[in-house]
Length: 453
Image (cartoon, rainbow, N blue to C red; front, side, top):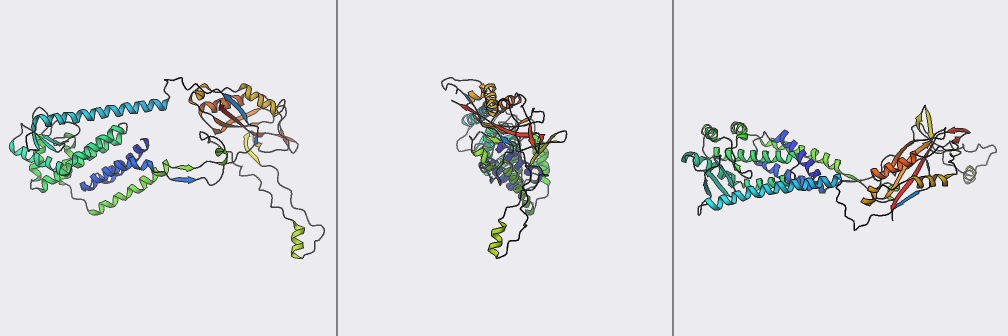
């Protein structure tokens, strides 16, 4: 429904900016109806794209830490609502209220038809409603206080509504408002379609022989505040008075105005791309459950040295070519040092790989023991049955301190926060990492898996 709201907004912007002032009423009516229907169909279409490369993790990857928790008892029912569930409840309540209002308006119309209908007549005379006349459900409703001449012209106007089946459009838009009650563009489309209906009916009356001046005088005499039902075409709609007057005397739009419809293509394409998603996940993501997502990856720095050249067997090449091997052939150049990572502080650079790794007190086994001992499985994640692997990145500084812990693979906010908390609790390492005999900061990745029994 949210996607449908965005599509409806795009369609309405095209209509309001480019089409609404044209006198091509049939085209505008068709555009509004197709736009509303398409807004509910297009969200079913997704453009799938593939990721061009797998996303690597850089740094020293520690052994996996497993944190287990007992799954909640399925027989226990929790009545607390999370934000998503609360939104669904609010949305459903709005749909029910708008649907009840629609049923109430239709019920009033049906009762009016049943009580005042005359045999073999589509015209029903009423009293007590502050409106000159309206049409609905295939009937014309006319105010009994009108003169015979005014009644005749208003009936002619309303008959144009019936001939074009405008009431079916109104029912469609009212149903759209039921499921899109939160979307202002659904209500704007509803008002715009009613305006197009009035323009079409006015055009039919004017082409039938009524002069523009007398018809405008009739509208001016009959327009006042109306309390007719919302599911009708009302002749005396004061909110459309000025627009109807303008459209009656406006120069007719030419067929070239239809070219404006082409602007729908980029509008729809932009939203299609915005709502599309990648097909599949990175290699690392595929190894775990579907709840996980890669949120940050550290690329190699731009100043990293190039990879070593592909080694070749010089002797074998010369023998195959029939050349004589000359002594003193220089050996291939040595491989470059391991790549550095990003600058972390005071111009220092953390390394992804070094000659000697930092040493934790008691070794990696004690580091894992520390993480297992101090990590708690969040209760809210247990209740929701959420589990999976969180990967935390950090670096050990030259002072043996754990720095810049961050999530590079996420599950949900609770599990991410717990993994970050426990990594930030790590004590100082015994020794820093060394490269070429000098202490350097070193990046680490630690996977922490939360699993329910």
